[in-house]
Image (cartoon, rainbow, N blue to C red; front, side, top):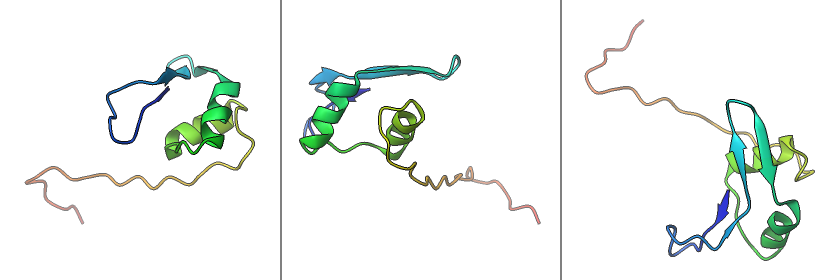
Length: 78
């Protein structure tokens, strides 16, 4: 998890943590995350839900709508 400026998404300002999906373990810099959020940083829905799960944030999880795109040429099954 990193902080990037909106106008330069490839420039990393600060590393705030990481998540291992296989081991389902996360390491997060709670104080720094809260600092950036208080200063206006936006968090993706997925990152927000991970931080709620790992007790970094106390707000409720956000609902995520996942849409599956069909490949071209794939016929609809009825």
